[in-house]
Length: 108
Length: 123
Image (tube, rainbow over all chains, first blue to last red; front, side):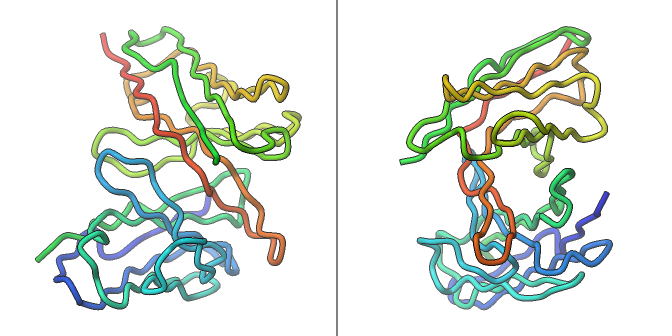
């Protein structure tokens, strides 16, 4: 299976900060990488697909980049509603999807 | 408006069975592959099983192969997950998820999720 490793596992930041979360795949996955946001008690929500395509309705302060094995989710100016847990997911091997372990973004 | 509603969760003893259901509405169910993703309490997301739009192709994570079976009825807009020989480590919220394929690049992703149903395996 393709292993997905996110870093950091947790992150403290303030409103207005720019933050970056990284995701590394155990093998090349081209650009088949998606990002999800999950708030406590809620189902995950799709933010970014195909490494850098913004899902409809997602604010433009969210940006995805990368290809191959290394990917980054950047939030340009944190808003209060952005404090959540973020997961990456590889969709290169669709018979065995895998997620990263998650990055919890907390208010400093 | 896409709606996915899971049901069938509950408390069950190890070794017993449970069947989860997912009712779909607001889209043409028969044209989408569907999946189950679970999340153990306080843990991350774990893909469990997937089924093609017509039900002929099915995929499972190794830890549930031979115990879980995914099926669907496109006339009833319903997805099921039959879970047998349940283990304590199967305890989780189970989400029903719709898979979409990007028409430009072929990437696949999960664009709609149900609210989840909690399965607790405990003696």
